[in-house]
Length: 246
Image (tube, rainbow, N blue to C red; front, side, top):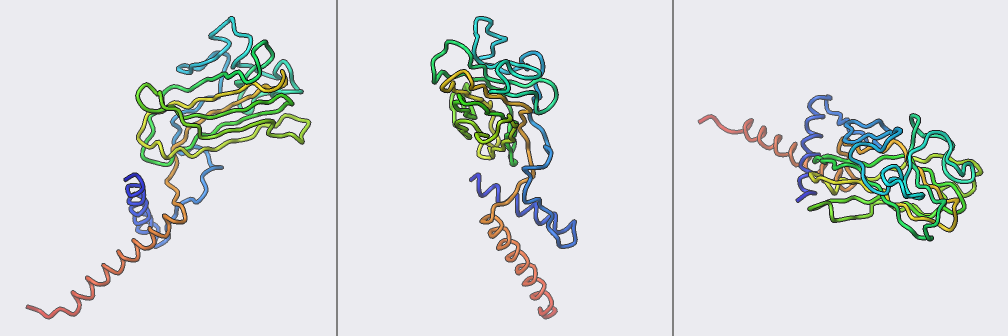
């Protein structure tokens, strides 16, 4: 049902654009590098835990010496691990791993609830995984009653820049259109690696609602539908032209 509804909306959109743009359908084929058309969540982080965010924040759990923290400038173990500064703004979030927790320990944080629409939603965020002790980072979508259903939509394991001596921010994009019309939370699940040089950093977390971008298969269905529509119009016009007056 979801696929049929999506294709129907795409055909309607293409038809509208053909009418407006004199026969040329203007649909962007790549929206990943564009600014958010409609931002459903945008978190650039500050000195305190953002409103509605939950989980293993060191600031919310003072006894914790490991977990997610907020910092400006370099992390305590930089430049061997962690970031030297924010990817955007002043502060960023990072997972501190210098402590007694055993290898494989999990630290999670999650966003507030986000109501998704029947469009093309993506998760976008900056990530930095630099250091010899990097474990892994999973991005999970929490949905369903009580947000009890968790599905992993991205897994990053080990250093993401192993050949670089300098910590570099990367940008991640995740398609979550399968959750259209649902209320979800986005969870960042960090796992402690082999040693204390395993700080994982994230910044500028966004959930964006984008224009619907057809796949190649959907383009084929759209084109077939438009051809049938045009043939139908031509058939009606031809019948009217050759019908004898009553």
